[in-house]
Image (cartoon, rainbow, N blue to C red; front, side, top):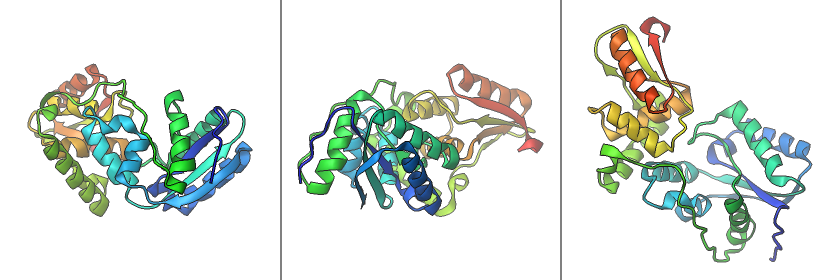
Length: 270
């Protein structure tokens, strides 16, 4: 099997396990692909392994983003994916449109967002090589370098052994898988009628955003920080603390000053 990978002509859509399990997502992907007028070069089901995940997102193979790397690995290896390699003019933009429309309808969380497609120039050709050639044929794949441009883990989370962080991430994932995202986190109770809520849309890397929360909640465990952060991304909000209006406002203001999105809500509104 031989393929000539022409720059600018080919790209990849990977329907992730949550998307592949949903007939509605898969049907919508088909509708969008037909409307895009891109031709399908290759399409197949695959169960990704750990190395495949790091080959696709190599920046998570380094030391900067350990929590993201573990959660991403757990997410992407949790079930079959579908790979669709497509060809056509303006292929990257059209694939991004497909991804954006799917996520707008079915979810945008980092760990429950249904579809991947490469967007950066340095990742497009390696993704195509991985999914068009290496996985279908078994041909060896050379991982491209990507150190990541955003700040990674810091503070007291960074001071913990990597094995502890990975263990906490796995424990969180099991709880969320078995009992739901909200079962994995309980807010701090300081006594009062107001909630300090974390909202989605963190502009930092996931690991740095979690690090900021850990510093703002010094009594929290790594698993609680991971749980609260992911709950906000998946559910649209997460209550970090219930207390007086001043207590809730102080915590929300502290996190907002560090770039996170927060909100203070009267307890009766939640």
